[in-house]
View 1 (cartoon, one colour):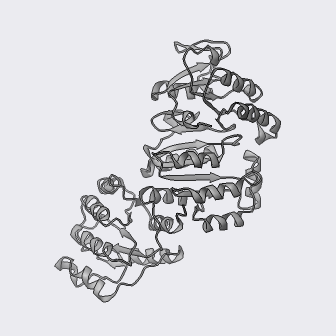
View 2 (cartoon, one colour):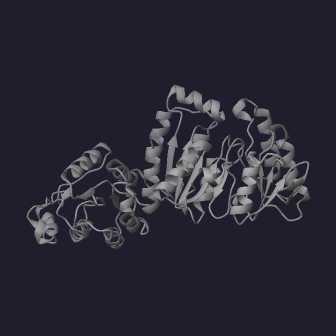
View 3 (tube, rainbow, N blue to C red):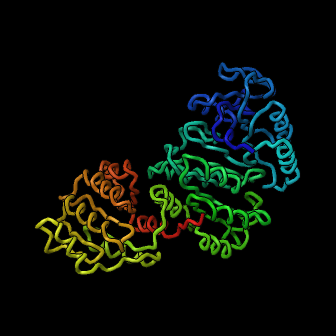
Length: 456
């Protein structure tokens, strides 16, 4: 099946719009795409008529030009007939927003839709989902544009069985400045599953990182997913729900998935170099890190700070998450100290963490970073910046980013989240250097590079 029309349609029909209720999910989807996206959108309602001056078609067959994608948000019992109409009209795929299928025990109805689609090689996402957000192309989420922020175009694709969790993550991405290449809410995953999407996203040029929120799998589906994810040439990050008995019950009632044995699944993820996030916060941090650096490290970390307390906390957290902060040899310490400004040469500690003290300047940070990036036993550099000390300026972001680019090693930054530090943070973000707003988040970003291993 050709999945490209699902994600990059030039034309779409929204089936199920109301002629009287502009808050109907179909209407929200139609207006959003008609007014905000380049895709040509057509409303479909059995009674036809006008929708804010635009013609509403009684059937998708009445639309004179070819339709790439149908967004179906109609009553579940009429969805099989709508899918048949789409196939007869030459539509290339569908997103089925409608609920009322296997998640409420109506398995036979869902199987009927799947059977119709399979026979015609007609790809669809859903049912019981939000559908697809494809930056620069279209958005099938029935959430008004003013009610959420969407991420800018980037290189992280997110697949989720939960529409709500997907929206939460997208808002988090927008806040943290993480760009998204594609977001897909698969709901009951009646036809197109995580496996098919992994295959598509591996050859999707814009996508560099694939993130998956999993509730459960069908029989033998989990094994197939693990095999496919292991072979994927791009980092795959997984967040799994249904870890506890209560969580398993919740998963089953949500999308009728089989949660399976979490401990076994988690162990297999690790063995196969697939990055597991334990919670949504880790997921966000891992995505930001791997969107910048698609590489594996053993875990030897250098730390540069201007606060001994921050350095100690970062060292403890590195140990907790399986990273090593190696003590530098005397000659390595001397190579750092020799580059520092005279004011701090005698008071800085260069053991690792390197504590430049509150008297440091931009020049000291740059020289310490350059020196540590040249050390073969340092694979990744954590830089903890407290911008309120007098010697730090907003230029530091751009200057340290230059060091990172030239060294071709990962650099991860901690800066407190305050709007007054925006210029400093922008210097890193426009150069692709990830910025964390807690020390633990910065360590998580480094941990993601340890978890990721490439087998293909």
